[in-house]
Image 1 (cartoon, rainbow over the protein chains, first blue to last red):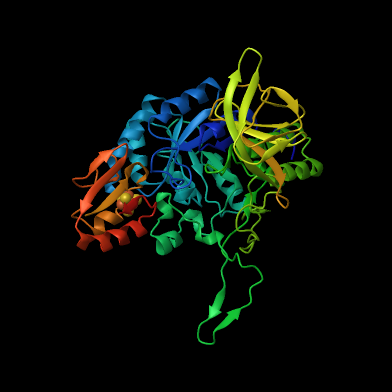
Image 2 (image 1 turned 90 degrees about the vertical axis):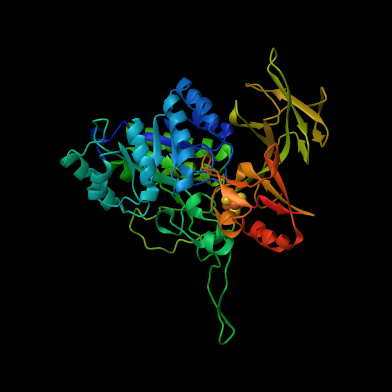
Length: 419
Length: 73
Ligand code: SF4
């Protein structure tokens, strides 16, 4: 792609389900983050750490660090949710949220009444220019359906420019796309499997992930089991577009969105970093196959179900995962938590609560102040004395840049196939 | 006497308990979560004594609550 044709304002939008992930997104150089509060977002079951009162803190951390903060309010809304919805929006408005991400018309209407900038969620399944035009009365950014091909995206973005379709802010409508993370077997996440089996509606953020399990198919009449070569017949692999990112940028996308509000800080930091680096490489003309291999390797070490490019290249369904959980090459094993910080000398102390640590181990520390930090154990002090191993009950200390509290978790990184 | 326990803060307001047992549950218009009528609450846990005859149905509801925050003792 000629360099002058590259949209240099492309934004990287990271998922945030905790303060650790928020710091991880900042560390990784995300331009913006999205988060949900209370029960009105699509990750109600899997990540419930934020409440209305957290809006203020999240927005202010983002502002201090120069990031935009978007609030997700994209479940199906019922009559009884209206009061809570209004309280959330009022708080979001007061705190100066940069935008709300919504699909339900009640949220769209309230945001427009309150003058809160709006982004249309992928739950709205926007797949054509007329829908973009319709939503442009209310929203400045539209997250397109995840099932579109590059050609379809390209034609939508060209039409936005040709027809000069603008949002309430007066600028051309921006196109946002999911570029990385879990994909749902149902179109735009509209799935009822969880509701049928466990009374838990995915459309209220309570998905129990039936699709991620193994299944057998049986002919009841003849009691014969059908042979299927992969039992994970409903579980798609994760979306990963780092190797077609240049094509995605060329198709006119403005915001690259990463899925994963229920994933750990290490996932947020590594995946966001890889996409930021890839974007920079595309901008400066150094995007290459070698780099792609390295980014993919880095991302395969954190939570994933195997990768594919989704529907962008027009491939048909059938990229099912071989794994029930993560196919990550590395695994984090919890060993303990932070206990003390000697701020004058910059030494953190951690208490080992399970397993052991030895010299040379790769450690990972997560926390609201540090996000995610990896460190190889090169000097191990137990209860102040230098040694080679530390076991449960020991207090270890080592130099650490940010404050250590009980909210810091200490993990050991091991290969997934050997514990 | 048996009891229904409701760990209210994690309620997602699906409305199932209210549909099934309207005499015991109602939806709060304020925060969109289910309220266990006449229960006594402390630190987010709400408790209501129920007669034996209601135990089985309450257990069925507890098992069907999508976020498993209802317990029957
Ligand atoms: S069934 Fe559970 S989640 Fe649904 S309204 Fe009742 S308590 Fe809340």
